[in-house]
Image (cartoon, rainbow, N blue to C red; front, side, top):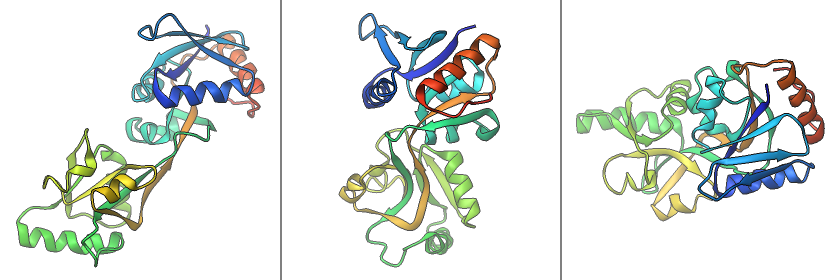
Length: 235
């Protein structure tokens, strides 16, 4: 069985991943047109390239349809239940960095940290008759983070679009979203809580326990790891 490596199908993540592998003597090449999701690996035998969206790669790893995948830590931790038992982080890649943070209106001058948000949430429900709404697309990570900090009086609002705009549009009172520079948050008059960092994420090369690992795929993984200068993995 060949080793299947999932690569983001387009965009900056794909370009940066290709450059990262190329620096280590492994060429990841698209074949065909830009609309064809096909590719190949040169420099290591027994490895097939599978082009997928970055959002699809966590599910494909969890199902064992690919052996390796390049995607964000935020996507794996959000979408793979018990992710630490399913996938192994072989290497953080040093690009695709973004922080998942909790942000509130900049005008909330007395709300500086999660304890302040907890107090506001309790008061909010008493005044408005419903729980304080937090817009996010990262439901599992946010729930775990809020639970660990004792914040319970809130509700999550699903946001798959421009999450930063939900407060201005009056569909949420706070947000939990990915940011790189913080400029979009500031443009929308939002501020990050002092202890509101949920996850510092970056693109990572993952291996899955769920795939059918045989002698050939294990040998290909060992050869790939050696070429990339990584410790010998044990899937």
